[in-house]
Image (tube, rainbow, N blue to C red):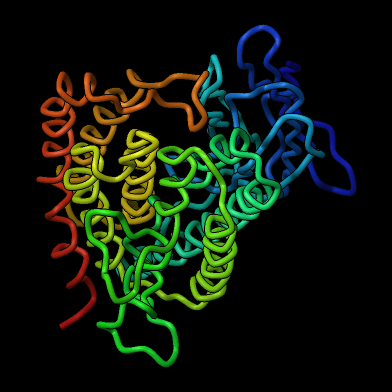
Length: 378
């Protein structure tokens, strides 16, 4: 890695991120700094099987990312205009997951204006995050469908846990979407039902659809049938519908806070219990997806919340850090999705510990919605 500033092309700094797997799972930058202004990050996965995404972060907020980074695919890139300051390149699954990146020159402007304005700016940033997550989910589901259509059970079983966490990150934002021509109580038009319904809570009038029906065929039955192919095509169609819908969303600060709380409730009720991934046992992949989604909602509220209640803001950050550390103990670079299977042995030994970790975060996080809901109103 070159410690000097990244070279510029047409006024844009150019940074290369290379993923390799010959000597452990390695995420490497060719330059660790760039001048303030537009910066393009070009990512290529040469041989790293356990690294599927690269993120640029600042204060825990994901500013830009590339997902679905399978080895051998063409290089991909994203460009951001960055002010001077400290950033991090995050490569989940790498031997060194967090790499420091410095931008020199004029510092990024601090949040200014009223607290209400700062919170509103945060909701706009979060909307971009949600849009990017669903775009990435659409790509991952396309790959799953391709391998299902080819009848390749082995590849489809790898694709499945790589596609799942995207939905878990943003589920609380989209579970109320109803397709045109349907009532809110009609599961046949409820996108959350059609994409994510579990065996434990089926509507017999509508039947089974979505991720978990495909999970059953791949991991329980071990075969791909014409019905499996139909399920994959339907999932692709519904995720495409979702991808269009999220681009129209507008959020209030309390939506982010309530959504974060809902995602942690999801962890408690369906991930720690092992109910979510009953056949594949990739519950910890989903667990991490829920936590990331909640963490991003909080991170985009943080600049405004820090003005309202600095002590609460600090406490929530500390609890997120503890949950992240807890989750790290279950990482496994040899498993698709990067986490150990949630076996009955792990569940028996650790479910109570995992639940306590989430409870310690839920309590302070639950206070945020009321605090941000009334700013600038009344």
